[in-house]
Length: 59
Image (tube, rainbow, N blue to C red; front, side):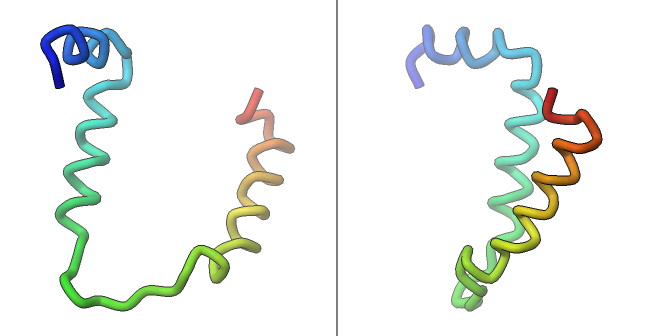
């Protein structure tokens, strides 16, 4: 990142959470581990989106 890009990133109020998420994602990787494709999670994702929409969390 350029210095300007770093400043813009840090201006986001949730930039620290984004960095933590990236670190956790990197730490969770297991070389050679086979995982299901996105299709395996489609129904769960749709259900969570519906739940969030009904709870007002997406407003």
